[in-house]
Image (cartoon, rainbow, N blue to C red):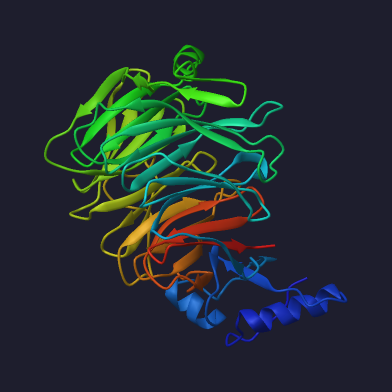
Length: 399
């Protein structure tokens, strides 16, 4: 059945109309797609913006709107929160700060354990999947001290006092601050990048882990800590030089992405360990990248305050879309893992913005941090974790 609506109607009016047609007891909030783009003003303004014709019937599709996030404080540190990562299957979270501390929290916001792993700021963090009866996983961190640290974590039921975090390996091959790390999907190898542009490949296979674990051993209540196992890189992808690397992502086994101050995003063929493609960002420094294997799309955050969306199947020179709403540097971009449309961005302007790629206007803007927001991640249960220069971690729940 075709329905005639006034061209001046907005999303609110359309939502009221759909609720009346559904004859439901509840009033749901909907979003509306016309020409596969969300209507953000009146229907008339949308038609004019996208140069649609009104001579034919226009199909307007509705979907449930993303709920407004509920924000709560997770953690308060004495130093800036530089990196945050959620654990698989909602086991909890891991944070790193500028004092070199690594913190594990459960979903009830209880600190399970906290260990100093760097002499100075932690700049980056990657975690493996939690596995086994003891709920074990590994953390790889890089710091301004030019060191990589490998730590073993055991949750033991996610209860306070049970968890344990032990540094077991150290990598000292970089000659500058370690700015980014990324695990491959299998968790058996990882790549690290430094401020001087070095890009190194490391092993986390069972042999390497057994050697590293042998660096610590205990007897009864008394524990003797021996010298940490020194990790050695397997290969060098880039020896560094003129430009800094700021961000890495390794979404599929065969492809690694790196980006930074050279105004490019590099795609690496990890089977042959060679550069496979280059995205040209036209004099725009790249601060953060993230790739969606589901949608085969790449996000990049920039110092010019914009977020850009790339599809290498169409162009390596021109982004598919640009999202401009932040006022300062974009510090992090992150896809929601089960979605091909939803992502979050954070900025030095102190805001967190939630986006759908079908609109250049953010769904929500959250201003909770009192200073720069430095990092973000999604959990499986549709929560966003953010940390910043106000020394706090916040959780923004969509449920």
